[in-house]
Amino acid sequence: METVTEILRKVGATVTFRNGTVTVNAARVRNFRAAQLSRKNRLPVLAIAPLLHRLGRAEVPYVGADRPWVRLSAPRDRDGVAGDNLGARPVDFHLSALRKMGARIVVTRDSYKARAKRLHGTTIALPYPSVGATETVLLASVLADGITIIKNAAGEPEVVDLISCLQKMGALIELDTNRVIRVEGVKKLHGTEHRVIPDRMEAAAFAVLAVATKGNILVRDAEAKHLITFLNALRKVGGEYRVEKNGIRFFRTGPLKPYAIETAPHPGFMTDWQPPFTVLLMLARGRSTVHETVYEDRFGYISEFNRLGARIEVVERCIKNPCRFAGGGYSHSIVIHGPTRLKGAAISVPDIRAGLAHLVVALTARGKSVISGIEHIDRGYEKIDTRLRRLGAQVVRRRAG
Image (cartoon, rainbow, N blue to C red; front, side, top):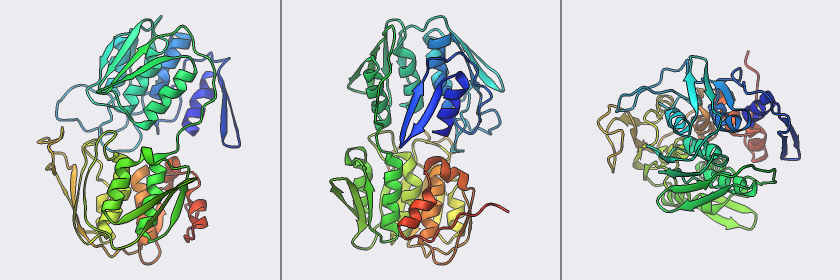
């Protein structure tokens, strides 16, 4: 939210917060340059299409310029997007779509510079059902001339929620079968009120925490329909849940059991659920596996887990089903030998979801743990230390040094 607010204010919008509600007034948006924003987040790329519609120009930071991106198995020129260091996150999907819709884009080491008098509708076939690329095309197509067809679009609840919001603002969008979205451009959009969906990553994180620590946690407002694959996996490993009037209650009734996980785009097992869920598999007796098919380099946190007492092998082979990383030399699968007797230690957090997993490990381990790099956790989980203390955890936040 901080990054989004920074973008909006940079281009001239006013943003106010009150009682959990954000109000945005975009009447005075005059600045197309947002290139001086923080490079720590890939969200500025999503501002390109709205700025092109509004001002005909856009300039946002090239947030991948200082990152050692790994190529996928099909070599080609690509632009990287920062965020967590999970492997290549190409924005060429975004840029090629915008170019096909009429944008002229120049990529420098510091920024993406785009121009367009008008964007026009076309057919966009995404090479992969990327959430960010789907959102970019949606934001570009709602005010473009003509009709835009998005093939192989992402179908995550967050994408559907964006579509719902855009429809309230006057957009004409149809969801078809087989990951196809049809957008008929309109002349203008108007303001609206919209309640965003609950954070399903956060709901899963607290579910894992409850099961790992043998606790009992009610996650208010959590939606079971957004967590179907996760809830099934949680029950398979020995966790349990109960849907209540005001949320979902998570708990555990017996020993944890080994399981095989394979990440995939929605409605599959979400890649962001993978690091916290790995903690449960570490605690289960027997052999578990995780096959990561979304990012080719998402197991950087495993060495830290092994240092804390886990027995996890990182392997290059696909487990269960062949995926797009097969034969590419990517360490995208793990084999877990449990159970693990975790011990407290000094822990360094590499990214948001792995950071939450490390926090669960620390709360499960015997003894005291000291966690550094908590800014990664803060990016994804608001006031996490305060909420954990309310649940009975002994967590103290201290400034470095």
